[in-house]
Image (cartoon, rainbow, N blue to C red; front, side, top):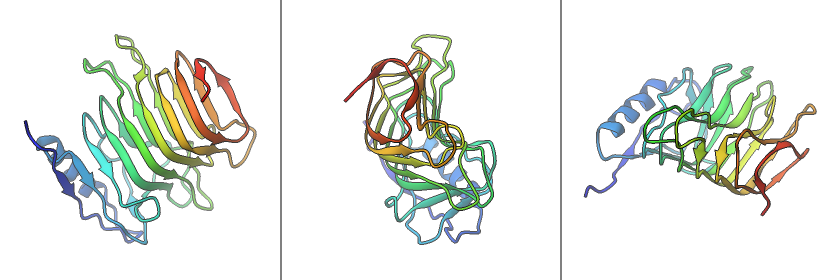
Length: 225
């Protein structure tokens, strides 16, 4: 039995420097060792990413110093910023924002493939996904549970104290989400007529104990709190 160790990553959070390579190197190191918790620094300026980082996969955790202390800024359009794949990862204690004049991207995306380990058991907690003036996310949080082999769907996802704002389409999409629970925080649609939360596909046993405006337009398998 090996202890889980923490890898402290020295991002350069000055609002300018691209940190993609630094984080990718940390993820590669964590995947090769028992340093499964990647700890990000506190800063009063955002940690900038000009490219899409490596996905967070089996058992890795990406942890900041709090929603007000660690902000990651994604300077890309129409891509997914933080990608969770396979099983058992955690994203916690940080904020995400698109870069100036950026749009169409996903803040946190759970992406399921047909790998043998299945897809799910992720924890997303104490997260703030918002935007700055002149920019917006396409979908701040998107769960895509499309698998064509058993076990189907994205399974057993836990959201705690997660608040999302200003999606161009939806603020939260839970598609083919099986036994997914959301406690605290909320989804707020800032503009337009699209509703805040979409729960659909083959989603079942989904619990939303959260605040959301403009309703849930398409809902299947919803279990009220």
